Image (cartoon, rainbow, N blue to C red; front, side, top):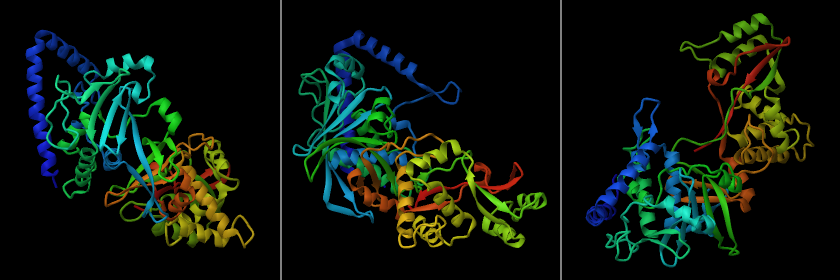
Length: 493
């Protein structure tokens, strides 16, 4: 399904205007302008990317890039927030809470050049002001450097006028430029919120259309033209050390908001996940960090026979091949330790005491014990009934549930199996979800309990490749027979 007809007409009119402005400039500036363009071309060639060492230059324009749906979803959220000026909260069932929302006043980005851009939303005027330089976070002292860097970054013609009609004024002309320098020496451009929302709508329709089922894809040309006109070169804003430290290493988008309930202004980072692509992973498996389980009643002969098991297709399905072997020979497993005790076990101590044993019990229940479901909440309830930690029966169910919620939230906040973690949350704002219908909702840090409930009710334990992640084969270590088990946790959709 293509973009709206009006949307395409805007771009066509802009292209015509752009060509006329460029021709006029060439006549006015002559050789000087040609020299400037030559220098720019040399710079562009110098900044070009070489594909796999073959010497072929790869364009850095967003028009020529392919990304997966999750990456394009970040651009969709960016455009949608600029277009609507609001970010509604979600309840524990991922339904919109109409009376709970954040007013978006600014979205902050850094492109590959490392230079900050601020997109200031004026919902009353219906405009978005794009500021490059000190207005985007630099100090006035560095404004001159910011201006020097931004020249030539914005395309020479604005694709849209502020009223959403075909543009009548081109940026950089002597009439009334949409691209200008403000009193502080900062580079600006103004577009309408309506155009941002139209671009978001066009991108979303493309992402969910039946014609775009490939793993990666281009965005519609009209959308690329528009975002290129406001300085966007990549759907995923590159990580910047200062920004990541301030707003969280897992933040996909940084926004400045006004809370509709108390009018407080905050800058915060949000992680973005979409529900129209493949389900996102919350906790990733690692080949170097499986859980190890003792195998009782095993010997070398049984280990060799077990490790040679496979079905007619050459696969080692646990329930088809491995579990029947364990039952037939009376092999029993119990948790021993984590292989990577230096990181994973240490990280789990920051979640809570006994977290490793609780996770190990859940993994055993699902992957070895044959739990009928992979649902995290259901597996946790089954473990709570067994109560391997010997908690008081009256509170056991609540304690196991809270422990798993703590683990899931820690995984969301930056904890992994291999990288040392100090317990500090890496997303200070929350979590943005793009629903299948295109609605954009969030769980704010202030609504932590609802978010934890959402994680608990909407995640599953997932099998991972035995070959890739090195599990399901019995190992003999220091005379002990150990079975490594690896796992990941994904969202349901």
